[in-house]
Length: 191
Image 1 (cartoon, rainbow, N blue to C red):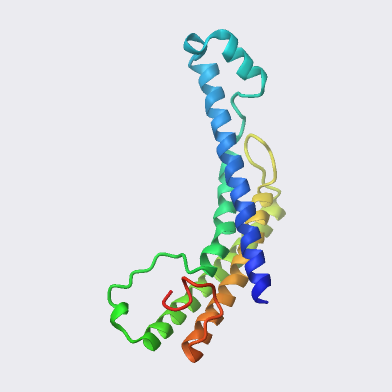
Image 2: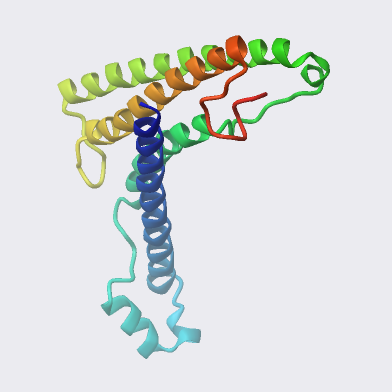
């Protein structure tokens, strides 16, 4: 189970990273293309270079913001499992650092459990939203792709995040009970 959780968290983060890099390239191409077309950058680039860029596909991308919106939503959910697994969420330990290790471990286990419940709630509501978008056959304005596709991609990553969150909450409770860490270094002892 331990290696399956690690593997799925890493794969989700890798796919999220690939999507994010693709979105950055898409945005750069679209912005550069809009500049070439609307702002007349051919004046200082030279008409030949501007025409060469436009002929290679650099140009305004219709519906780029729709793709960015869907892709970033997916990427956020895709990065959540690896962040959860390695205890990468922001914490404020001003007062808890003075607590004994056992008390701090139980406090971290409590918050980890609460976070797992919140992630499960978000995953559930995302599934309800996806089913609603599927039933209504809602599409995006410009590209006309079904909105439920973005919901489905985000839901897949949210399911991985939910499983990881439950595993991490269980791992924090195990540490609080036994002092034995089953989670990766960096997040198991104090969160």
